[in-house]
Image (cartoon, rainbow, N blue to C red; front, side, top):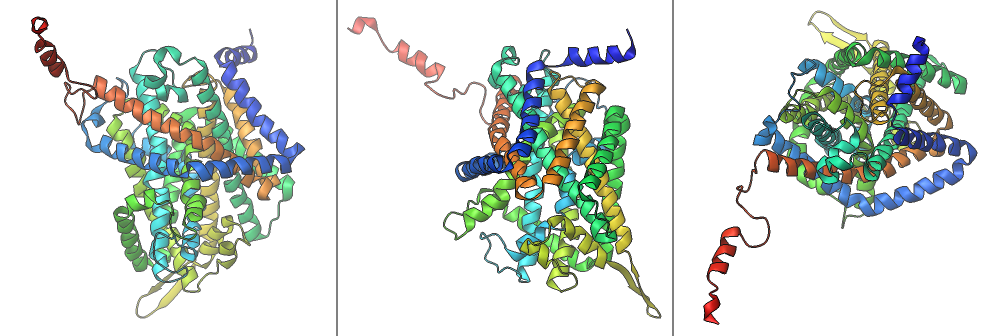
Length: 556
């Protein structure tokens, strides 16, 4: 048998046919439907999206808040010492952190870093009594951005990663797939049943929809940068060429595997990410950024509960604001939770629950908070002081992807040595570094998500065949390219809404995964709040014995 025949045979043998076929059909079906009748599909998705946002907004807020609280408890509580498997960790802590951070989350961080705080500066949350465009709105804008990109979004990825990894590595017959997060709820004997299959199929669709939408944003940022900086208008053919090249790059990285591909590129990403962040900090209003970051971070901590559970009830425009921003972000993050959680589980073998929880919400926040403070804070400062003009972006006349290029273009290094004063324009260098970072994060997001989808469609194999990885890599790349070409309200917006529709059910999956962990940990590792003899409902055993003994049949 030739190597080619052996590769194809391995691809066919490892498939979970139900999950693969339904996942592929759903994804390809959406792509075809967009071409056949984009109006009908877009209107249908928008209707369902509005219903989900309108009726489940409170549930998403409450569930995400409870998950954050539970992860904080795992970090400081006795259950944190529980280990995921019996082996030693496969990667160094830095590589583990870099892969966890850049495997998907950081792509959104790079895109929204120069932009998001500008919208909150112009239109602050009604929770805060501050006027849009005012000096007071600057700190609130960064505080709101930190809240959206620090603990909560990371928490939904982390809880899925811990749940999948714990049950897969600590139980004998539990595969490495999304439905395994609900092992105590579904039961070990039912992990190949209809409910588990439905969860895994929805996970494939949610991952393709959510990740491809994000990659469409990142790809458009790259294409916009070429046009903005050098006047290179690629058109649809150029967009296909750019995305095809990026798809080829992340496919190569993916085929190389986690150790040789994703790990090395993730380490490079973090180095460039830190370098660009520090350059912005030095070239920007350094002292102001320190003061702004201190105030915004303390505000996020002190207002965390109220920001987490704010629904806008009673405030004019409050609920609409929350739905447009916080609820949208939580739902979008939840649509990423199957892929991110599965990838986190894949690289977490041998680590303790405490270590994964700490890395997932604290170590990553330690990288996210400075980025949004330095880059987003500099953008707000530049807009407030008339140094740069983001008016078209804020008004919606220009895309959010332009903000980074507007910001970096005006930055320069300056110094006053007493006898000489000089300034060095570094905008072109920063823009080039920004575009490289966009590209490399595109690659790491795509190859890690493709690996996760391949694992989902092979019944949980940690190392799926190259044919499977390449197939889903092509699907993901083509979906991102189609979204960029379709553009506007029927492209990225429509599938972004579809990602929210698929993300909302995963709020309940994440919640059940948390309940399953609590149930298993308390049963196998001992209760924390209540002693072992405490009866949760009904009379206690001793009370029943006393009642029985006090009844003397002879009294009748």
